[in-house]
Length: 273
Image (cartoon, rainbow, N blue to C red):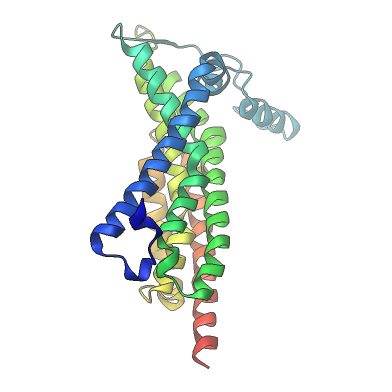
């Protein structure tokens, strides 16, 4: 611990590794702490969160059903989701219990993780960068949670419902393993949380001089194609509605990234003047 108290400008490589180790230890400890909270309330995390998109009473289905009825649009109401979930192994339930708790712990600890990263890199930054980094962490956290909520309330339920109700024959009964259901749900939630960080990635690349507004603006058409491809990869259902639901936010994030890079470039020009 003595090495951590040194002036970080005078720290050796090993001192930096020691410092990094303690940051990682604190991050893991906080994730475990949040995970324990979820381990205490398994009924809530499974019935109210994980399995909620399986119920016709899920808030997203109700909202879209109301929209369909108000504007006379068919196919937006899900009154029955007819499929069963099961385990293949005796230990599966317990393992999923631990896995989901740690995943939830990571999601809720995300702001603290960013704060620890900020504390680690702070000594190497200039004064103006230190003052800006606090805002960057706040925005990064908001973007991550917006992506998580977008994946949970929009992408996951419609994709799960499409895949669960898709059938090749009436002679085939819809039964799925819980791990396949969980994989789609958690994968979409975490991936959309990460993907919504695109503007922040653009910010840091612009700060490093590796990305410019002109480059992004000139490649809008390719970005649109990439958005469609990513949407097709993220949404296993592959239907037009799901593709649109994912591609549009990706496109908006790209446009936001252009604005972010433009702001960074203007600030750089002011510093030069």
